Length: 87
Image 1 (cartoon, rainbow, N blue to C red):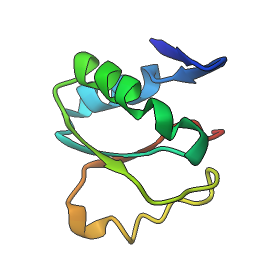
Image 2 (cartoon, rainbow, N blue to C red):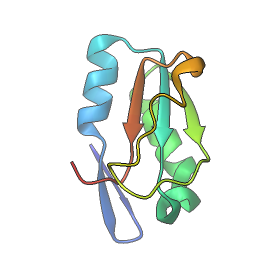
Image 3 (spheres, rainbow, N blue to C red):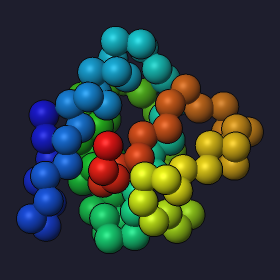
Image 4 (cartoon, rainbow, N blue to C red):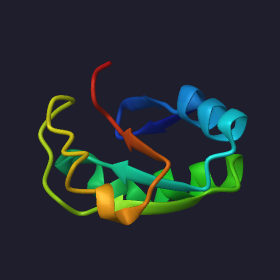
């Protein structure tokens, strides 16, 4: 289950499998600047594949090492999914 956007293939299968398997209910999506224009397509895809509630981070992020999980601690999320970052 991958989503193709602007010439990029976003591999969402692992995220949807994890969300469904663990029955996570509240997910934070961290989307980098270049993909934020597509956040609705990403959100629609994930909502169709899972039953979770999603929060979109509007904070600037610049790569896989830019995940500030301590900032999101108060949001009570089950999982942070960094979209568009390298593994």
